[in-house]
Image 1 (tube, one colour):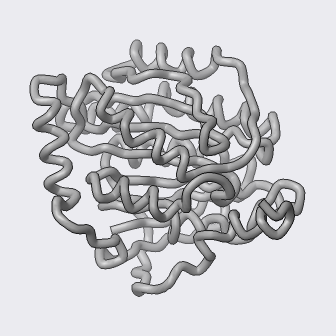
Image 2 (tube, rainbow, N blue to C red; image 1 turned 90 degrees about the horizontal axis):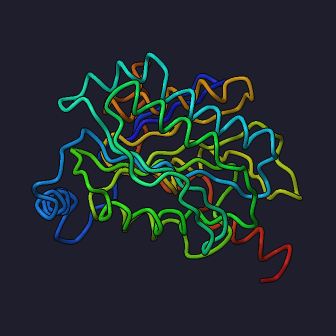
Length: 282
């Protein structure tokens, strides 16, 4: 089941389990069991969480700074630490990387254990001390392909494996995003999304209308996956905190739920590539 939450425009929906693509054997459940078996003896955590953060040029410096601060503040918040303790192990493993083009990903924080205020403070400080950077192009597929093998490098094993993608535009570089998404889902990995929609769509930045629909239909997937969209700059940090709370606690939004019938994507999953081709012919 997938869930959609909009910060700034109260919209939430859940997709029936049939919306999640089916896969050939071995299925997602078996893949998770194999993953846990391969890491037998590793310290258990409630979730292995990858935070994949967009730093493309369409993000202005103020947005990038707020994004960094949002993650740092969320990790040390009282609500986050309470959610952390609600899990069976009371701890998570997290890594944080920034991405832009298909060949441009940079790990800011390698795998770290968060099990209380001290380790949360350490991770938050690491996030804030790294210089902010920007880079060209937007490859969500590249971010997903980069993220998947990171789970094999994690010295912990989690009950859940989650890739958290935040960004302000559609995929326009690298492989199609749906192929990357489906490969991750086939491995039992959940993908959640944080589409950033605080600016009006612009020709120069390749923004699109209904980026939240794009994330819902083309990017996220897996049991309990969800989208939290940001349409108000003032809600930026609140949205990040809400998203992390849901991921750590393994919960879905506790709001009115509207079931969405099985359907074709409302936004073309190749819209970013088409816009780039139309404008620059390559």
